[in-house]
Length: 624
Image (cartoon, rainbow, N blue to C red; front, side, top):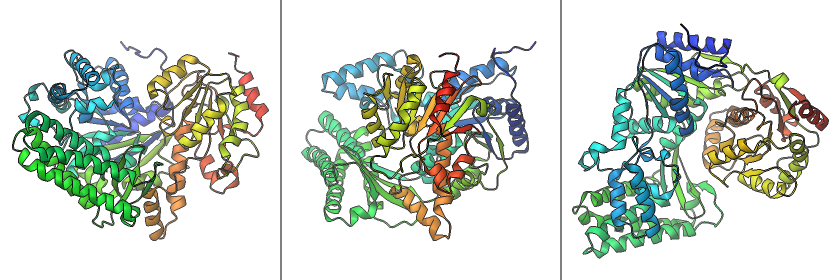
């Protein structure tokens, strides 16, 4: 007897065809690229054949949220529908798991009453949690600074020498991962495994015969981060704080250690103050060619050497201080490496309000990713709703060195021509105009009034978002939700519950968001999402393409922006019953030759330049 576990499920030809294609690839051990438009049901289309193969499977998702949705929602449904039993497991990176040893140490050394009370709440939670996943503790945000003292890093983990090793939540999770038939991870953890193989030959993840990369369009950017190096102000101050905690507890007869900690923290502060107040990104050459910046960086290096020297005799006192000494040594090596010329790496910096980062990013990752794939010896399935640009997979394939793989594409089953209207008004301002956002709002407000809120207003910069928030507050009577005012999940809950809200968001709201129904009936996009041309990594990559005789604008900038635009547009129609208006406020869509490239990458919708058509579209909605 057949059981329908999803009461509203209807067979979708594209989903069945995709599942068959994935099944054939697994049987032939053939790597594959698959694009499946929104609504295809791609998750089930790759899960079913992967599980039916009886092979060990790893699924990597773009974010932790999608990872948890797949593990907590999709897999239980699949389990109900399948006769075959399988054992799933969820594995995140080290920083997502409570470290019992570090928690105890923090409780012993904390002198701040408020901080100690919060640590005690974590201690109470620790007695009841089965997984130690810090996301379970809803009363303390995963990004709260206190978690640093209750989680571990590779550098400060005691490993098998830890007295809590047998109860270690991370080790328990990794053991389950080894034993599972299907393991759900995210791209950050996959890339951490890749990075470890590159640097030390060790590995984080178990062997698998099938590896599915969901939201594959994000992989190259995440990989570039993990295969590079980064030093932040926090890395230095954390080392000083850890060393000072060890000094206060165990080595108060070594004043040089205390002085070294204070000296390093002062050097970090001075280096940040040497930059302009406004946060910015820049090239490494900007630092070494500037007398003041170069001098304060040399002073930072000297302060790190001083603390390293003080930690050497202290490291013999206990394991924690030995780890601090090792970390100081690693930071020294990494900082010195920034001075070494390396044409395969892009060296750059970024400043924040109170901190900074020094970064080294690979110019190209295609070759190393191919090596990683070969080492893994698995069948790789790459999938997303946005991998092609204008029906061509060349850009995605080139980013990871996958130009030789077979690729398939299924469009969304949604009837965009009936369900959506694309509004692009006449006489839009040019994006380069200083008051562009102010002028765009004159066109957007009538749309937001016609839609009666129920909209995502997506921006390409925080500056534009903040300006729009300032201007809209007094012009509309609908709830206004601003990115950053609450955690992302809280904002989305408020948006759904309000039913008539307007949410203003930037990059993180352009993708991975699923709001179905009338609550989201309009998506407005301010500009084509081209990356900032002064970004040091982008500049270096564009320069490399041009140096090889290519056209960096059409080979890199346009495809990148087109995929980002597809993701933003994809927020509008999430179900067969959804209806909505898309508004793109960038005149380059029609006035530049490359505009057609963007239009060809979007679903086929009715188009208008008349606000009356927008009003008529919403007037037809029976709910009004």
